[in-house]
Picture 1 (cartoon, rainbow, N blue to C red):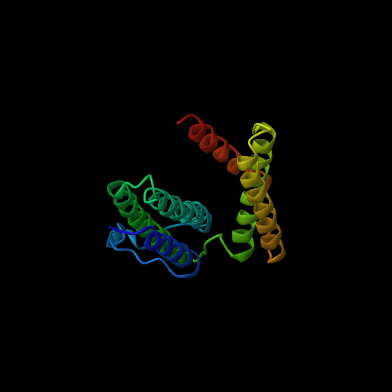
Picture 2: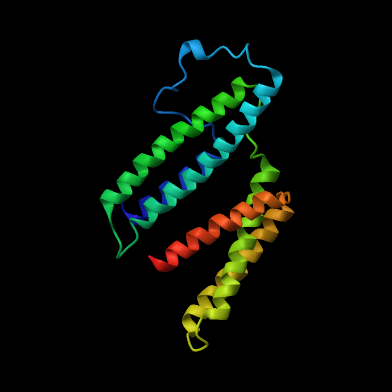
Length: 197
């Protein structure tokens, strides 16, 4: 059985590998040999394929964070569910395959992932801004007499503001409005579901 400290170290390792190391697939890429020749694709078709694969690549980076965090939560003291944690880790390994496949396909198409340093930090900035707004809403809604919860949320909010500022100072770029809107919509769905379940 994995201890919580092991799970925390594994989560940190997973995050670092996802961001800084090329992904390594445990399964072969499903591309068949006869599909490997791209010479019949027009430049516009290649550009479209590359753009769509960049979107898939970003999704797989996000999936890594999701499965790692969920597996960690499944091992949290008082909520331990080792079977669920192992199931989530297995799904995460398959997502690593997807990440490796999309990285390789982008290279084959003569393209690159979209998450360069500036964009990656831009996602951090926007995420932290949205979390800050979410926490501000909680501060307004928490009962005035719940001093313990208010103290925790206030500290979290301060930390999120600092994280966003540091990411911006490190070179984070402003994300386009449609991306920010999609992030807000996804966050709304997740927070609404979490509030009710």
